[in-house]
Figure 1 (spheres, helix red, strand yellow):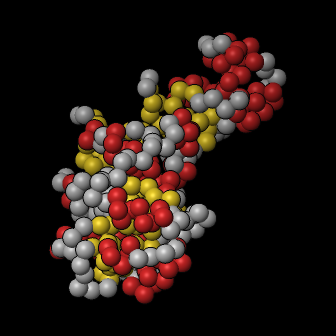
Figure 2: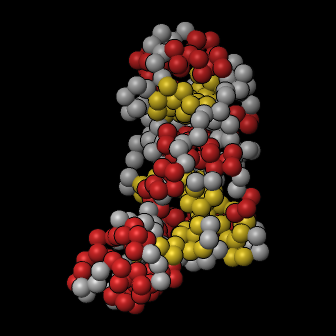
Length: 320
């Protein structure tokens, strides 16, 4: 299956699942292919035939954008090396959850979350420690007795009851011993917080020197500016309250700039952000809902309220 067909299939699946899907980010380089929203859930999706092509810089960018845009980054792919991704299993690459199309279909369309995740050493599940402790006590088993039956240490069983994850083999033994489910789903839509907490959000990259004068204005009027290096925009900026976020682009006003501005408008509608594209000289005030602002105009802005008024005159803040 070609990557273009795979992207079409995944976007169609997300639409079937009730997501509003952005335009495809057909720019290079790009950290993600589409953004999608369903109610309060927002995802940034990279779609790949072979997930080994997902490198560390792209993973870092997606995790940063997920933090700044209140979105969950994820990869949907077909295989790793010469092996197809297993259905019902969540993989991880550079702190980002990875699903096969079948797993994504089960999760988003059928509402069946994955229970298994892959990590060094094999396949693992999340053990519900409270349920395990209740079942053990109901069977009048001590920690040591259960440990002997499983062939592990007493300390290991204690850790399972404290919430430590177990291999799929141990989970199957526990469910055979006690009957019923003892596992809880992998928290895909929470950004797989256990992985995220283990790997803090990477630092922002340095801004391109050509963009520094533009981004400096946003910082001067009170925005915290987060440069990007693989997104269709040059930065995500947020005011002190974190309630007002702006996707910012910058270049000469070319056909490529219009294309990026359209993508930014589409992404803004999904992420509920404003979008502004700064150019040296403009022949129009907006591209869709992306405000087009000349650099001299921006440099004359005195404060954040004046900046918001300027955007309101040129583009609209996208809403659900």
